[in-house]
Length: 428
Ligand code: CMC
View (cartoon, rainbow, N blue to C red):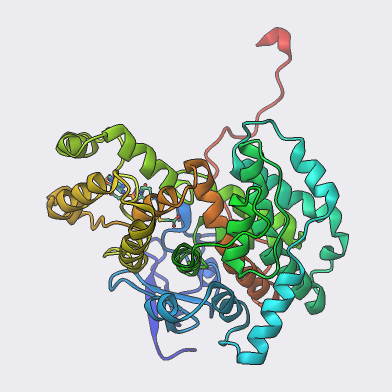
């Protein structure tokens, strides 16, 4: 028994139970021994939305929500955003250590090698409605990849897992770019493997008739920083979906399609799209106080504010705000920025937001940058899914190696009708 324990007294029976506390946690299964009778199943915890339940042990990402700290494999997000690249950071997240020069060159080469999509995938994507939302295209096309790579079902083979990881990190940007080209009715651009990861992505998005696309270095770097910031965020909604689906031993393409679906919602990866729509709806700085009053009356939320884990300023939001200045120096200032700054100023002084510890999150400013770079709002969640692919895969791989894990299967409190006989239609 661990040296730290908690004693629970069952007032119904007077019995006492001593439960070990390890890493600030008690095991929910230890509560099962608390019963009142032989038919009693044992005590459960009720935790809708997993607000206070650790569903796994992880070595990937650390968040201290009160202090506003985010570390990938121990490295502060601020240092990675300043010195690293997305591909290097994704290697770190997936394999636990920063690569040396040879490892990074090999990793970059492997990813570059896998950027092409099977021509049948192109035909599959061409079948979408002309105005299909790119996020819908992305998640269904990723699911479709499971039919192209049936070998991905061999999830217990480390070699196969590594291959699918490389394929997914390389191919998701191609699918994302083609989803965008499809939505604007332009031909799909093939990857240019001379370019960097983000440079090639910009090429597939924006190349027109020029023979060689040359990304603007400031925008290429800004996108790379945004990708680093979004690469992982421990057990969020989409990552939990990835782990949950993966726990049934589904192939990673199917699991990642589910994770992307979870990301599509406005409370998660769709939030920056919602921020832009909100800023547009507010329309002018003078209308900010009225909008804040409406939020306080419960008539909607201040999108891009608040977080389940951060109860202080999201460290990613601070980096994004700096990156925005560099992008606007190239693209021109996004006119909605003034409304965003005023919203932030008022909200950070207002007791409603201060008392609930609601601060700007990663999505509050990212949409403004994406819009200034020429992305339509429909693409914002897709831009989140590209880097998060690295995090989803790292968490999936970790889950499959974890001997504590089984198929995810929460319990419920049943509140429906008790057993009763079937009633024929003529008697109802
Ligand atoms: N605007 C106004 N009030 C808010 C907001 C907001 N954005 N967020 C939370 N609140 C209030 C909420 O009404 C509640 O008040 P009360 O206690 O009076 O009922 C209190 O703050 C606690 O909120 P909650 O809904 O219990 O908090 P949660 O941890 O369940 O929700 C959240 C977290 C991110 C879903 C929520 O803050 C939210 O809806 N934010 C807006 C959407 C958004 O920006 N999402 C992006 C999250 S970061 C990117 C990512 O991880 O995907």
